[in-house]
Each structure stands twice: as structure tokens, then as C-alpha cells.
Length: 218
Ligand code: B12
Image 1: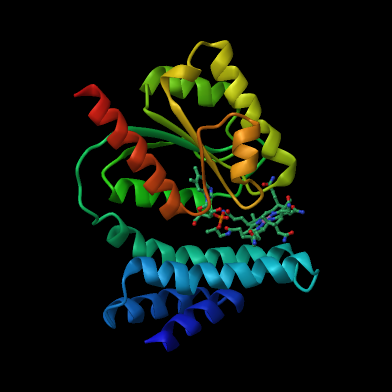
Image 2: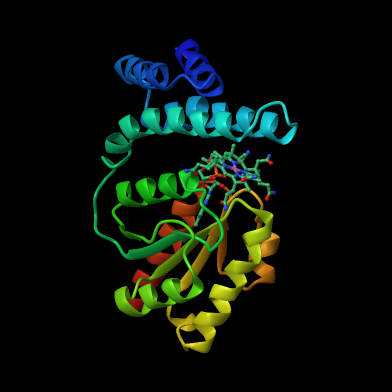
């Protein structure tokens, strides 16, 4: 069983797009769960890719091909992740902050949230603070989620929070942040309400907020 997960990881590292897709299908056929395949196969592959990129052992075109191989597998898992127990719960506006185009992690968060019964308004990548605030005004979500993978764009999260304060919207929603360079400490520093180390933890935190809100409304 573990073997197919190792092969999926290697397909991502070796930039083999078709193989990533074929092996993901094989793993599903073997009865592995979508979340297992995601966390113990696809994501592990990208992690190695990131480490090699940092050490200058590979370059951007290779990272892009690995990301494509990841997406080929992930697309097959997405419908399974969406099969979670559906109970419409709340709205979440989600996006990657201005200056950053990384969206793999954000898309996983979006899929898991949808699988947990949330309506997700995904603003995409490189989202300006004005667009985040406009979406909050328009959709009136219970939660705003922001993602970033770059240290240089982390301060953008604080700018969005300040903009929400300026528009008197901050008290109306919970803000959760995530992405490799941010942390619980950073969330506290910029006065976000929460930080999700991974998509699953993010969903659990949001679930807790929505349950608390539900019981305080009763
Ligand atoms: C794939 C990748 C790319 C792809 C992105 C493809 C895409 N569509 O996203 C491409 C090739 C385009 C790319 C480009 C660049 N990249 Co890049 N990239 C990566 C890589 C290898 C993997 C990122 C990834 O997808 N990880 C897998 C996902 C699943 O993990 P994740 O995003 O962290 O998400 C999880 C959690 O963090 C969390 N999460 C994420 N968001 C949120 C949000 C909420 C609300 C919650 C609750 C949770 C949550 O849940 C997710 C799932 O569990 C990383 C290395 C790494 N180790 O992270 C570098 C990395 C992020 N990139 C890096 C760099 C420098 C760049 C470039 C600037 C390179 C360049 N010179 O042009 C450009 C950036 C362009 C831009 N303006 O944005 C650096 C950043 C360094 C830094 N500290 O700032 C990294 C760390 C590589 C490195 N080791 O140096 N990159």
C-alpha cells in the first residue's frame, strides 16, 4: 500500500505528469483515501521539490513541471475530497494575497472546506486588499482566509486586516491565515483570529468558530 504513495511522491519529484495521474488512480483503486494520497504522496513530493529548489539543485521550470504533476493527481482527488458530509454551514472568502501566485495550498484549503459543507468564494491569487474587502462587503462571509508562500508578501495580510478595520468590517468576521512562512505567532502579531498549519487544521479551527457562533445564537 505504502509503495504506491512512494511512487506518487517520486512522480512529483521527477516531474512525471501522466505518471502522477495514473498512480493516483491506482492508489484510489487500492482503496487509499484521498486525504492519505494527498498528504503522504503528492504533498511529500512537492516538499522535496521545495527543498531542492532552495538548495539551487533545481530551477523554476522544474518546479513548475512538478507543480503540474501535483495538479494532475490533485484534480483526481478533488471530487473525493468534496464527498465529505455535506451540511451548508457558512461562507468563507479565500485568496492568495497580492504579489503571490502560489495557489496549490489555497486550493487544497478550498476543497476541504467545500467537502466540509462550506460555501467558498475563491478570489484566486494576487488578490489586492481592496478586492478582499470588496468581497467581504459583497458576500458577507463568516470567515476570511488568506494564504501566502512568500516572506515578502506576508505584510500584505496585515494590510488587509487594517483595511477591514478602516471599513468597520473587522468585528463582523473571523480571519484565518496560512501558508509556509506564517505562524501562530505571526497571526497574533497582525491580529488575525487564527492560523492553520495545514488545510485540515484550518478547517477544524473554522468548524470550531462556526459551532461556537451557532451555540451562542441559540
Ligand atoms: C510549487 C511552487 C511554485 C510554483 C507555484 C505553482 C502554483 N500554482 O502554486 C511556481 C513555479 C509558480 C513558483 C513560483 C515562485 N516561487 Co515557489 N514554490 C513552490 C514550492 C516548491 C511548493 C509550494 C506548494 O505548493 N507547496 C505544497 C502546498 C500543499 O503547501 P502550502 O502552500 O504550504 O499549503 C499548505 C499549508 O501551508 C496550508 N495553507 C496554505 N495556505 C493556507 C491558507 C489558509 C487560510 C489555511 C488555513 C491554511 C493554508 O494548507 C496547505 C495544505 O495543507 C515552494 C517550496 C515549499 N516547500 O513550500 C516554493 C516557494 C514557496 N517558492 C519560492 C519562490 C522564491 C518563488 C518565486 C519568487 C521564484 C522566482 N524567482 O520567480 C516565484 C513566486 C512568484 C510569485 N510572485 O508568487 C520560495 C519562497 C521563499 C520565501 N521564503 O519567500 C519557496 C519556499 C521555495 C524555496 N525553498 O525557496 N513556486
